[in-house]
Each structure stands twice: as C-alpha cells, then as structure tokens.
Length: 215
Image (cartoon, rainbow, N blue to C red):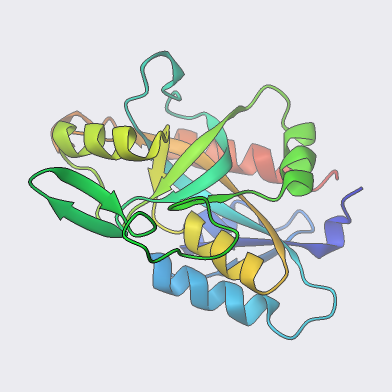
C-alpha cells in the first residue's frame, strides 16, 4: 500500500509542476536536464530515514515505435528509464558506456534503470489502461527523423524526455523508490512535423495528479 503523504513529484518546470499542485501532493521543481534532476532528487532524498516515493513527471515527445507509438495527449508510465547518450559513437555505431566496461551502477542493466516495481504497480493501479514502456532520457532532443529513429532503435523507448533516468538513478543510489510518468506533448522527428499540443499534454498531467491524489 502506498502512503500518499510520502509521494514527491519532481518536475522540470513550474508549468509541469503546477499540474500536480493543489491536490495534496508534494511537488519539487528541478530545472531542465539530467544534472538538475539528479541534484534535486539528491536534495529531496539524502539523509532521510523515511525517503519519499519519487515520481519524475512532465511532458515528453513520442518516439517512432510503430503500433506502440503513444498518441499526443496520452499518458505513459515508464517501466524503464534509459540513458540514450552515455557511451561511444563511431562509424560502426553506438556502444553503451556499460558495454565499454564502465557500468553506471550495480543495479543498472546496461544504460537502463528499472522503475521500482511496487511504485510502478501503484501508479498503474490508479491509471488503468495507461500505456507503459521504456522512456529514453536525452540531452539532445530528437529534432530530425533520423535522430528519433536512432534513439528509438538504441533504447527501445516509446518516448523521450530529459530527466527521468537521472531521477531514478539518484533515488536508487540513496535508497528511495522512483518511477517516471509522462504525458505526450509532441512527436519527435523533423521539427516542422512535431505537432505540439501542450494544452492536451498538461490536461493529461492534471488528470494523473487527480488520480494520484486518491491513493
């Protein structure tokens, strides 16, 4: 059973965080990107005997995943957060940092970090039918079809954002449980074809917040 009072939502921006305010959930704004996300998570968790249940939340772009590509305005719960860029790129392709012999953490699977099973189950329980899948964490968003295809193939992810893996990583190192929750605001790929629909994405986050507040 999840104690709602222990939930902490970490969002990159005020606008994303606003979707979770006013419903009894604690919210923290980290700033955009992996470094900000890791620092914010560390500040929230370090030294606490009863660490929060961390949800990395915000908007994301859908990656080309065929029939599994999430629709704009839909929610995605991350089963796995995957660092998309840690490694080596050569003419022969991409080698992950783990494959190079430098594992990210003892609990990592290559460049991937699994969501906490219990917290994942709890979030799924209040958001039945919501899409689940791998979410890539990128430093450079996919603004061309070529890059979007590469990130999707490299990670097996159905969406990309800029913080999730760092939040899960820092939380796990400090003994906290974490999961990633995203709403799809746009497609990735060629910039002029991305079809941004922010109002729909923020409405989806607000619906998720209302559901989480009922835990």
